[in-house]
Every structure is written in structure tokens, then in C-alpha cells.
Length: 231
Image 1 (cartoon, rainbow, N blue to C red):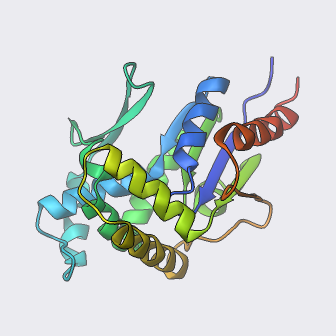
Image 2 (cartoon, helix red, strand yellow):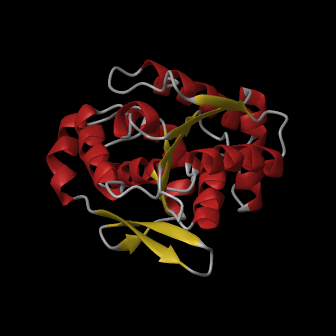
């Protein structure tokens, strides 16, 4: 029987972290946790409570409301992965909009928000056998993870991927605003004071600007196999 390990996948927005992590967890029979969905759900909550807009952010107001925010994942066999629930309501579709994307980095920079979610994430992975993706998994959430991956790709490549994804969903967006959002999120994620997006010293960097999904998946799966050898 192979030993279970903790797999941390970090990287910039739209590098395909979630897609790889979902497939990896499915292949291994591991738990998959999309931490980005958790921050997006908190952002959606703040938006619904009129605590954040494109020009204003009532941080103190959000901090007072944190105890009212309950997050959970429920597996949906129809789609093959666990969907995000906010206070008992499925918000998987709502949290993937451009409006949420434009505000999530601001919410994720709030220390009290990060503290709440990091504690929840660490509890989810206490028994290993988990694949978690986000911005600070290998540096803050699971600094002792057996495998750390850091995914990168050019801003133009990532914007094009995101643009195609949103257009396919029927959203009305422009490539230019998607690119601007990607660049702005990169800056906010990398420069925030609390848990900035950085590559862990022992993380393996994978640039998938020109890699197909199968090629990068096979590369990561081979790394997992080498680490989860027989006891």
C-alpha cells in the first residue's frame, strides 16, 4: 500500500492549478481542495453585504461578519468534483464571475480572512491524502508538504485561457479587461503583506505556457509516484 502524501500546488491565476489538482486527486483517490474558491466565496459574501465594490472596501465591516461565514465543499458526481457552498448555498457558478475575480485579491489580502481560512485548510489536510491548490499552500498552509508544485505561465497565455473559459460560459467580456485583471491580480497577490505569492524554496516550478495538459499532468504524476513509494 502506497503512503499518502500532501500535495501543494501554488502559482499565479489562470495557470491551470485547479484543473491539474482535480485530475490528480481523482487519479490518486485523494481529497481535493480549491482554496481559491474559498477566498472567492468570502468575496461574494462581502459583495452581497455591500462591503466591497470596485472603489470601496469596508475591511472592518467584513472582519465583524467573518463569524457568519460558513464554507464547505460538497462532491457533485455529475461534474466529478466538490463544489463550493457558502452558508449552505451552492455558489460554484457565482464565484467564477469576472466581478468576483476583480475583487478577490483585495479580500485575500486581509489578514483575518487568511487566518480563518488557513486554519480551515490545515484541518482539512491533517490526515494527508490531499491535493490543495492556491497561493500560499506550500509556504504557509502546508510548509512540510511532501510535494510542492509552483505553476507559472505568461500573462498573455493566462489571459487568453481565462477569456476562452468565460466566453464559453456565455459571459460578455473582452480580452483586454481579462489581461488587465490578470496583471493586477499578479501584482496584488505578490505584494500583499500577509502570505504573498512566492515560490517555496523546495517547490518544483512548472512553466506550462507551451505545455499541453497531458504533458504537464504526466510530469507531476511521475513526481507523486516517486514520493509515495511502497512502505
